[in-house]
Length: 611
Ligand code: F6R
Image 1 (cartoon, protein in one colour):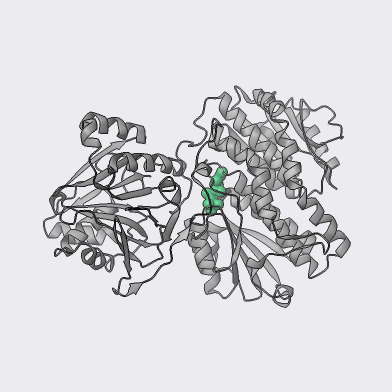
Image 2 (cartoon, rainbow, N blue to C red):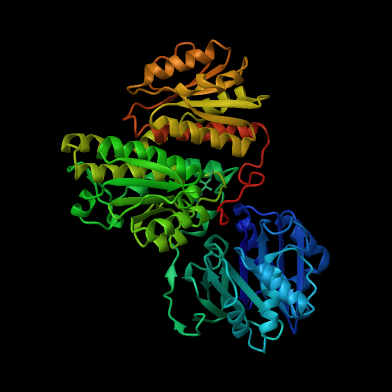
C-alpha cells in the first residue's frame, strides 16, 4: 500500500527520493509525490500514475543542475483510500500556506471531526483526504518547533499513522512518527533516511532504527533523537538489516515473481535451518517459546490469516490434526473479531502473515490476546507489527518478497507449520519412527522444489492451454484443497483469468454447470489416500470436454489427462509445497503470455494495512 521515503544529508534529495519510490512500487499505489526543503521554502511535485511519470515531470520542471542541488526531502506513493487517485489527493499535503509538508501512511479515523473544526476556523481544504486534516492540524499547533507541533497534533488523532514532516523554517530536519504503520530510519555516513520499508533505503545503508508505536523522531543528517508523545526520551538500538541490496533487485530475472519462485530452494533451506532434529524426528522452534509441558497442554489450535497466508493455514490445519492429533481450524482473520470467538488460555492461536502488517490479521491478534489465548506470529518481515504485537513466534526467513503475488512466503509458511505440527506431534501421539520419516521428508524440500523448477519449460508450454480462456478450475482434496485454492488465487491475481479453487468432490454440487469444452481444470491428483477419488472427480470434468491438467506423482499414470505436471514422490503433506511451486510457475507463464504486469497487478497492494 502507501510508501514513504525521506532523505536528509549532503546529497541531492531528488534522485534518492525517486529511487526510493521505485523500490516501494511493489507495495501497490496509484499516485506519487515529493516535497523538498530548499533555502527557506518548500517545493513540491505530484503526479497520478507511476513513479516514472513523476520522474518525467521532475525533468520537465527542473534543470538537471537544479535537480542536483543538495536538499532535504520527503516522498510518498499513495494507494487511494479517502478520495480517488488525483493530484490534489496525492501526498505531500500542506499547512501554513505551504510552510509544512506531510506524507502519511495509515488512516486518521477522526479526520471528519478535525476537518469540520478546522473548516469552521476558515481552513479551505484542497483534497478529500484524511491526511490533509492532519497536515492542517499540525499547522494549527505550530509555534516554531516542528516536532512539538507534530506531537500536539498527534495527541488529538485517532487511527494509524506513519508520517514524515518537513517545515520550511527548519532546514535539514525531518520529523517522523509512527503508530500502527511501520517506519524505519536508515543511519548513514553524514546522511539519514526514513522509510516505511527497508527496501527503500538498503542501497544507502544497512544500519537501521525501527521506530515503535508512539515514537516521534527528529532526524538530521548525523543525529536521530526520539521521544514519545509525553516527550520522554526513548533509546532505540541501531540494528543491521539482515539482507543485502541485491535481495531487492531482480538479479537478471524478468520479474521479481520469477526470481522469488526460483529462490524457494534457498528460502526453504533457511526456513528449515537449525530447526529439524533428524535423529529425534522432531523440530526445534525456539520462537514457539513454550515448555514441552505448555505445548502438551494446548487443547486447540486456531490459525488466522488472509489470502495466501490463509491457504497456508489450511495446510497447517491438516498437519496439526494428522500429525499432532490436536483439533485445529483455520479462520479468516477479517471475520475473527466480529464473531465474538470462543477463545481461552488453552488455545494456541497462530497468526500467519508475510508482511506482518495486514490490518485484519493484526486486529484478530489483538482480539485473541485480549481473550487470553497464547498467540504466536508466523511472519516474514522482521520487526513488523504482528511480530512485535505477538512477542513470540517463528520467522519464515524467506527473505524480502517484492512481487505482490506471494510465492516463497507461502511455501515457507507451510514448511514452518509442518515443523510446528511435527514438534507438537512428537510431544503427543507421533511415534519417533514416524517423526523421523516426516523430518527426513521436510529436509528434502529444497531438492523436491528444485526438481519442479527443473521442469519450468514443460510448465511454460502447458500455459498455452489457458490462452483465450476466461475461466479455469483447480481441484484438490485434503491438504491439496488448500493448494487448489492457492493455485487459483495465483492465476486470477496475476493473469486476470477468473479461476476457482474447489474441493474436488464439491464441483458436482454446483460449479460443474460452468464447465464447457476446453475449460482448463487443474487436478491435484498426487499419490495419497484419496488419489482415486480425485481421479473420479477429474473424469466427471473430462466427460464434459474440459481440458484436464493433472498434477501427479512422478511414476504415476495420468490416464486421459490432456497435460501432465509431475512432482517428485513424497509425503502427501510435504507434497503441498512442490505442487504449489508448479502452480506458481503455471500462473506466471499464463500471465506472461497474456502480457500482464506480473509484479504489480492492477488494484492490488503488497501489504494490506486497511480493513
Ligand atoms: C496473494 C497475496 C495476498 C496476501 C494477503 C495477506 O498472492 O499475497 O493474498 O497473502 O494479502 O498478506 P500477509 O501475508 O502479508 O498478511
